[in-house]
Amino acid sequence: MAYKPFDLTGKVSLVTGGNRGIGLGMAEALAASGSDIVIWGSNAERNIEAEGKLTQYGVRVLAQVVDVADEQQVVKGMAEAAVAMGRIDTVIANAGIGRGSPSFIEMTTETYRKVLSVNLDGVFWTFREACRHMVERAKAGDPGGSIVGVASLAAIEGAARNEAYAATKGAVISMMKSVAVEHARYGVRANAILPGWIATDMTAGAQGNDTFTSKVISRVPARRWGEPADFGGIAVYLGSDASSYHSGDLFVIDGGYAIF
Image (cartoon, rainbow, N blue to C red; front, side):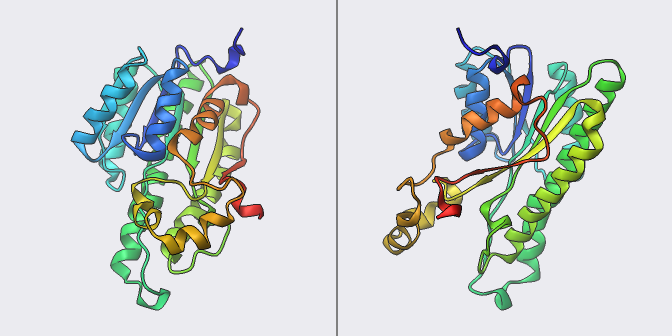
């Protein structure tokens, strides 16, 4: 018999950037565990493709075109999702971009602002609107909820030539901790996931680079790139009642890279 708290039947999970990569990997695991799914993505075609994969699990799926760098799209998207699905129990702020530069002194303000708009502003608005919904539910007698921010190892390690990206991911951790403390009284918990080197579109260039493979991936104790499916277990745990007393924590999923 399966451990009952991992059964997500009756719950609704929203994943930003959920139409590919880590986001889709988490959304599929959540759906396989019984959760209805909302995915946000700015590419309508990819949303449709992801929706097709997720509906195969027999759950309700809502795919919304939402650019998290646009405050009003986030506000509208969250409100519409709550009405359409009836509730939102878990929100995973996963959408992000990675833009570095040849060196820090060559990094443009345009690059800096663009990275912040998605990776930090987008998470801020997503967290805020998710908390708004969950607090309103709690005040109506239905407490509980899980807020998850997808950060990065760049938040805790030195990420040369990626100062803007690293800054946003460190900020996501600090924001998450504040959310966790303030909203515990409503039964809402908040945590962060820190991926290591994962095979996604964002790392496509490095995946085919022999030098990167020999210098970096060879140092991963697991001896391989991570895959989006590797994030399914933590998504289900954080979306389930099994994590009801687990808040304000960081989950490093990197094949052991950070400790080696």
